[in-house]
Length: 184
Image (tube, rainbow, N blue to C red):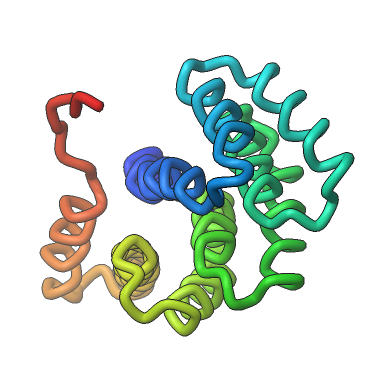
């Protein structure tokens, strides 16, 4: 089952937040390269960002920061399967990094794979118990799972009057509120 557009946008907004944080990983030595790729992505120059990231990775194929940015670029470009592969490899090779687990979870949730998303978020939180974005995303996943469970229960027992208010409340929770745009 695929998530509703509202739950998908809530989860994906968290991935965008982590995309900005990914650039902060960069060390002083390579800050210009990471910063340039991140800036190209922020400017909507996805093809340039992708080419720059791939060129950098060709010379340093194990660099987790640029590979993370590559996954973000793939996500922003709509190459979901490639991004899933990139983040999956990062989680396997660097399980101690919470951000790839979080972004992988967001993509999995976007595909309706909520149980797998929950597992990835649990790993992100184990890696960094203070990772607020992962905690928020985990809450969103649990809310979506609860919504699906209540909807199924209501299908099976239409006479249960306690279910409809719960389902309505969760749907309101999963619908993102309109916020004014933040300035950089």
